[in-house]
Amino acid sequence: MFPAYAGADSYPHISIAKGGLEEATKAAVSTLGGMKVFVSQGDKVVIKPNMSFAHPPERATNTHPEVVRALSEMCIEAGAASVMVLDNPLQGAELCLERSGIQEACRLVPQTSVHAFSSSRFFREVRLDQGKNMRQASVMQDVLEADVLIAAPVAKSHSATGVSLSMKGMMGLIRDRGIMHRRYNLSSAIVDLCTLLRADLTVIDATRVLSSHGPYGPGEVISARTIIASRDMVAADAKTVEMFPWYGRDIRPDQVAHIREAHERGLGRMDLENLETRTVTA
Image 1 (cartoon, helix red, strand yellow):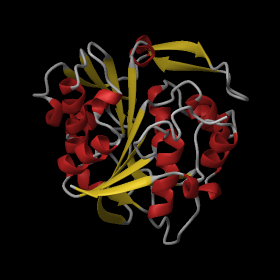
Image 2: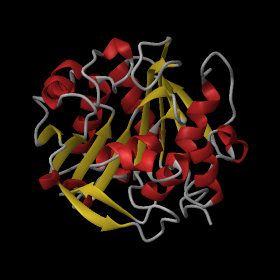
Image 3: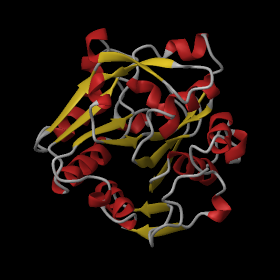
């Protein structure tokens, strides 16, 4: 029912690293075995951060640019042929690229490019064979052709789903995310989408946590200097939910509908008590 990796090696299911942005990002991945566990020589890699808003890093609505740059550098060092940082932004593409700081941060990383795609020519209609309700989606062509998908969301609250983490963030890789709100039960549709867009590695930027008024903000921003990583999107999301207050209160992973449903459908695990978590200081 659950991913085959669980308990299959000496690495923890979840790593938590605390410290500086670059150092914590690299330490979190290293604790899972290092980027070479996920990226092989010649791979095409897609990194999916939050880059939807024309906001600076301190608003905590986008992934911090230094986290994205650190991941890109690690992928190239592991032998990736190319790294594409992709998002379909909710605000003007050029402003998002500029004000998020992500494009500038990655400018000097070899074989790395940063794009905010929204035109239909960048997307292809595909079936979601394991979807229960949403059975098709228009997905970025470059994602479909990638060898490795890395989810790199910022940790933030969300007015419709409670939180927006790695699973919710996959909505930024399809053309019409609004249809998931209008036509389907949003939480179930997120799980349907993640049956296809299932990240090989999830690295959650909780250096700043938008604890209220997400996804747009402004809201309460908690300075946490923390990175959470896992091979399992559901486990990474569940751990992040457990670690921080949301809207001023603690909530359990099973109180987030899409996390609970993903666990029940075998997409990943939210039973954190049975998963090994290792915490390091970078």
